[in-house]
Amino acid sequence: MKIVRKLAGADTDKTVQPRLKPWKVLVVDDEPDVLQITALSLRGFEFSGRTLRLIEAGSAEEARKLLREEGDIALALIDVVMETDDAGLKLVAFIREELGNTMMRLIIRTGQPGIAPERYVIDNFDIDDYKDKTELTSQKLYTTVRSALKGYRDLQAIELNRIGLHRILDVTPELYDLHRDRLEDYFRGILLQVVGICNLGHSGMISTIDGLVATLDGKIINIRSGIGELADKTGNEARRHEIIELCTQTVLSHEAPAQLRNGALIAQLRVRDEIFGFIYLEDEGILATEDRELIQIMANQCAAALDSFRMHHSLEESYQQAIDMLAEVAEFKDSTTGAHIRRIEEYTRRLSLELGLGAEQAAAYAQASRLHDVGKVGIPDHILKKPGPLTSEEFSVMKRHTHIGDMLLRRNPSLALARSVAHTHHEHWDGNGYPDGLKGESIPFEARIVAVVDVFDALVSIRPYKPSWPAEKAIEQVQLESGTHLDPKMATAFIALFRRGELNDLIASCQAESR
Image (cartoon, rainbow, N blue to C red):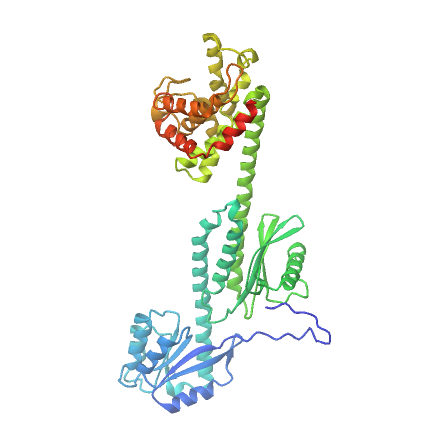
């Protein structure tokens, strides 16, 4: 299935059809004359666009050797009486039981039906036909072979569909395991799976395959992955560009252009009425109908996965925008905490990684930490910005910011992590914190992380009621509060980061603001 180019002086209507590999037919008989007559009778035979390749064996033992060497034999014509009276029947048992080959069509031909009666053989051996050599004329041999090959082709199509669908079911969970930073690997994986479906064992019908996956974003076409001559870096760039134009025309207009040879496959990545892109394949043979159906099923799964990926990340972006908006509200209310919020986010991410969390979980905790003080929007300015110590009554009002933050964030389930931080980041390891007096590991993990970094950054920052502390003095305070206010494990990890100098940039930015 190659692109047909219009060359000067060439007749573009004449295309060379691909030559398909012949059907393999094993003929087992110890009489040379029978082998010769069989070959003459089947000379010029063709079925489904494929000729025959006869493989001859003069004994059952020789046939066993050939069967181990040759793959995808479609049909075997087997004599019964050869080196022994039941050599042919034992060969049938060998094919079905030892080789486990249930696809090959087996036809018994015998010149001595009395030794192997037809009913006995049919009832006790897994064969597809029984013929007396005396009745097997050239015409009947033609009919018998054609019927057997048709049965083999149809059984093979059913089996390949079964294997192909099983493969699609196996890889479908992987199709939905999409990550923004691994999309190119994902698309290459799709292409390899599709090519794998085509190479499930079509008796050599599938040869070298060229293909690509592309996505559409409005009118912008992005080639995501290519294979064979359409590979991303090693392929023919001019040809890739030509195919992209032709495929896009086909996908958008639903009409195949004349320049795209019949037989090339374009499988749309479509969900409902929206087209995400397409998979294009071409090879030197012919993609059978069952191949095309399986590939389209795979394409449908990929399109559904891409749609799910897009929706998921749309929700993620909405979540990020909600956090940004609420963080800006908190910053607008108290400009002295704006930079503090941004530093808390980065402190939280680094401490989470130090504690052994994965990058995604660390990022989620860091993002949630930005809203730890969002409840301060409900605290009166004369308390929030008071230049001196708070009275006990004022402190009681200040403590309400944990409840206010909880109330603000409870309406949106996607903000559950941020809500947890906002509500519990002032709880103490020893149970003397607020608002609920939680103790030890009953305090949410994420809140214990934020508590450590919040204490440190508050100490090194200027506040209306205090000057900034030197970083060394602040880290000593973190050590002092370990086991009382702060989770000892998290305080130790934070101090380790400090000692390694991995917080220096954040501390320097805070000190620059203090000048």
